Image (cartoon, rainbow, N blue to C red; front, side, top):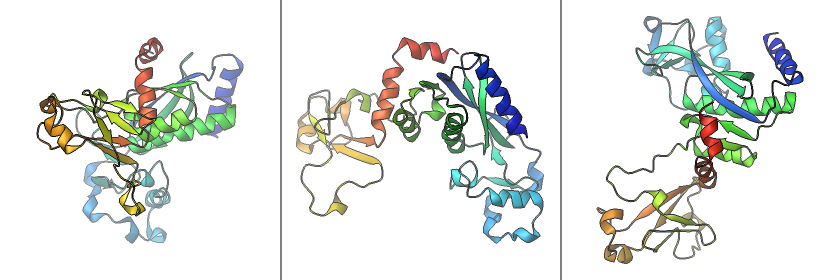
Length: 285
């Protein structure tokens, strides 16, 4: 009934011209659960596989039903530090400043023309579940209202490679900061300083040298690409050792290597969008 009431309201907003469906944003809010730490169990002593559903209270049965759902149990293999007896589906989190607590995440898909929320989805309060809810809501508003945004605005938590890859594949421009850990704190060149040569499947360093993934053909495919969504590109040892910029590139290594993720093209699309005026405007909304 609540879903029907909500979607009826969204449909009315669309009819009245308050929703264009072209520019959307995504975010999540933590909703504190009616649970507390004294009535909980540490993860080392909580084994869902040993719970007998027929003998469990209603809250525990509902928790068992969510273990295979992408928004809850299947969102991550990492087990929460504590599990509540009264509400085990809730997540122990320290997302806010202050003491940790049990919570859920309420995820919102918002049409930014007039700030109308066009869909909501409840998940565990962890980044993987919150990011995963985006696909659920985009699929739902497309099926229910035929809404397909031309761009989506979000914070860095949504800037992972797989997330950006899905958006770019759906021809949705990601106005999202890239979640990137390739930066270096020692002042040496980062991956951004190397030019990607897609035609030849290689990186070019600032000194003009090539970093290649494979320098010979493999008769055994198991010795080739690892198939894990990450490729590593390496410079030649002799070239790097003789390079005048070695101290700025691979000071404590024999040669320089760079990893490239499966969705690096989509990540680059997001980086290019971040240089535009439209991106600056969307980040201020």
